[in-house]
Image (tube, rainbow, N blue to C red; front, side):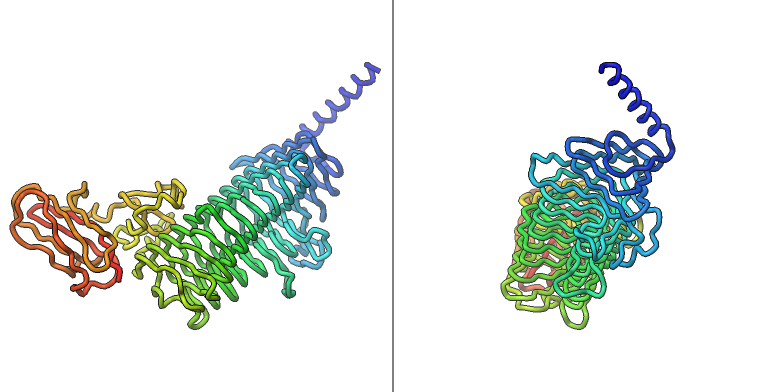
Length: 535
């Protein structure tokens, strides 16, 4: 008996060595162990059993030879590298576009747990998933590339999902009851749903669809994805996700071209997202929020289009507070809220320290019943060039114009470009924090160092300014606009050394709502402080 066991062990070692040294290995049925060959050709459905593990090493191509799937009941690790990704694909994509036949795709990866004791887990790093699909005849029509159900532990880092399709929701990733970490991933050209669209059979989340989840979706790019229902790039239903530092560009859906959130109470601030050039046939070209409570802060929502609400759309008891956000260049079909559309009187969004093109006049739908405080309507002055074209120019009115106390928002430490979120002493509007002082390149200006102060700021009717004069000299103090034109003269004469206080009378001036600068000038020097006027 002992000799027989030794023979079996030798045969297993020889078999494993053959797999390791081979260039191509065929797999079907039960799998486990280590894959470190050039190509795994999947010739039938494969299955990782409970309690077993499989490690896929960098550079492996997992090529499905037909419409086959991968069921994971154990522990899967697919650990690629930046220069050697792991690729999950299919050998023939002919017919991939046809959602009524299984042709041209592979069936995806399935992780289904009934309870925590199932111990199902998966880690994907530097993996590429392409041309997976579900079709009309599937028993599970959601989750084109990855389907997750129940308390599964799953992480996706530096992965790319491209041209995956699902008959219903989540063409790249679908999860229900799980809370995966999705970080620094790319979602490109994925499509959820089918044409013609059938009533009550919609596809949600062209890139990702998550339900009953506390998932983290961070640092990812959603480009050119589509869904037939809600959320061209991303859809969340009944969730409490973290959505921060993402880019949603060129996505499309009837509701929420960029992304949509439904029936959710989101505790973490939805922050530092760039939402641009997304489209919607109906509502919310940028973002659609339906029966949702959330804080949105420091998002840049620009150049989106919808028939109703090019930028933001609120519906059915959505109580959302929007802070430090830029809404600019969004448009709609006709006069239907280029910036914001509110469907009903029981949705009450609030806006604080935002730059909103058109102001309240750019809102449409039901009457606006929320708070609208310290907002401006001025050209954001984006850089429009370089690696980050949506960063702010040096003299943008959005610099240091966010709320003074932002700590309660618990914003990410870094902005969308990876720079510290707060610079120059106060937070900016939008997803990018300016890294240049607006006075750095102006001759004669020097750091403030509390020499010039304003309170309150923003100001409605009047404010107090204090100026510390270093020596007796001629000083001129005035308020100028962003074009350098004086709009309020405060003091012009000889001023003794010491601290002096002045009143800025806004109510009696012609200065309108917007961003200005309080400037003190003397022989050989100037100093300025940003002043926000609200009416």
